[in-house]
Length: 448
Image (cartoon, rainbow, N blue to C red; front, side, top):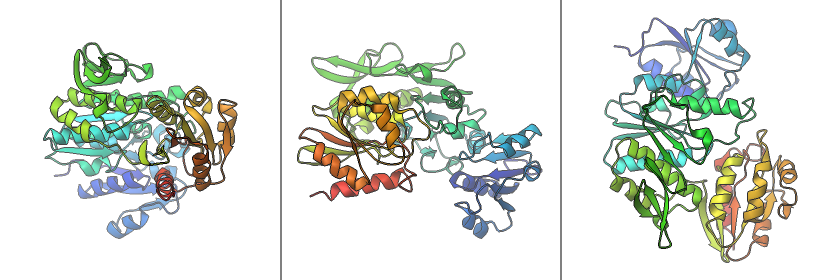
């Protein structure tokens, strides 16, 4: 029997990774649907035509009359809800939804829901590893890795989901067992009217949540909650009741819960204050869903971090090189600069620049002045970063990534670190942040 009444007609709008997961889900349940995409040749078009030749697919400019044939539109995260054709359909009574909404309706196991401007992939992966170490049948995905609908299975005991603001725009009632927004800083300002609109999109993650985790050092992460909702916090300060944080005793710094020391910070493989915060956030989320501390701490001791996220590449002539290509916004770059800079004796040589997505780079200035020896700038919006930094530190312009690495090496002294943390998207020079990070790591590994 179908999980969805099949006498309704739906349209999947957007044929990327999540769109194709929707196609598989709907087709497997005998639902009547079609597909539309604003692009003439979307990424999954060949797969759709091969595997589902009977499905009506319309490419190019969205046809409002066609969209209005549907009861519900499942809109890709990559397409803004402000798109005029979508707004016109909504005005005529068509429901706008997404794959996460559909996933939430069908998931039979508790959901750990994680969003934030930065670090959500690291925390999501870490909570998944903690759950596996505790013997749970866990599924991890969403914005990270496997699309949500492809994870659905009756034998899963826990879902750990990374969710972007774009996915949350079409999520109306997630009903997570525990939800968090790790941090909020300006991102995607080319899509949102300002920080308040972005903040509102992120906070949709708390709809229907049974428990909440917030960052007590970032007021924007704390939701307006109903009385009695269990609430846990994390932060780098000394923890109190229902809180995870850091405590220092006899010169040794510990991850701690309430008044109990859990493990020394030096036993973490992941470096920097920002990664200590990530570890504490993961502990809070895992604790909220009943994971035992021994399994969670065991995972923390072995977790080496994710590729392109403050990833140590190598040391050469006393200088460490870090690939933080995933830092596609100012907040992520700040976390890396502050996190690494406060955890080392030397200074940073920062490589930054690319497609700034309309961001304000002035927030970088103080941290760069404090922790950096020099900044090497490349890419389309390098001039905007240069203007925002002013005379904080010496600035060097590079014509390519290889040139940026060579210039950084020339500036660095023993005890320093070269940090690729661009504060920008990569699309002006690279296919994506992964390609940028791989090319950086390859070039650094090849240094004689």
